[in-house]
Length: 118
Image (cartoon, rainbow, N blue to C red; front, top):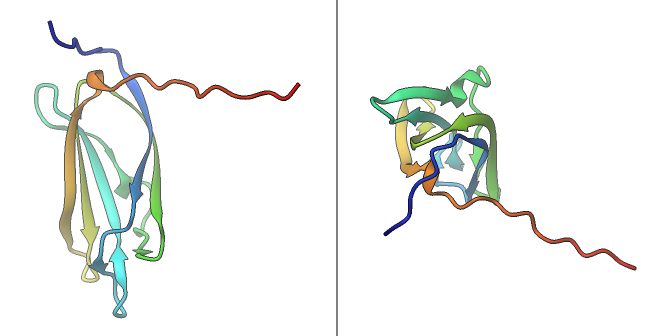
């Protein structure tokens, strides 16, 4: 039969990058100055969220940092595209990576059992 997607909206609360991509961030340092956009791909590509709207100046992260977290709080459903770009020192941008997924194919999150002492 196959798996039938769940079309109910889900809440995207955060995006985490484990490891920091190695781009030039000035002064000979390596890291990245990431910005990202989230698009819905239901009928046509439409922008749902842009991290550029969160602050005036994007923040740079060095490679010494283990992970980067972005808090989003966005209801999403069906096909979603997330694109990351690196802001260069000349205020241009270059692609880092992108990914597409169908929200309805995600497994529901389960709460981990807790152990209580007697």
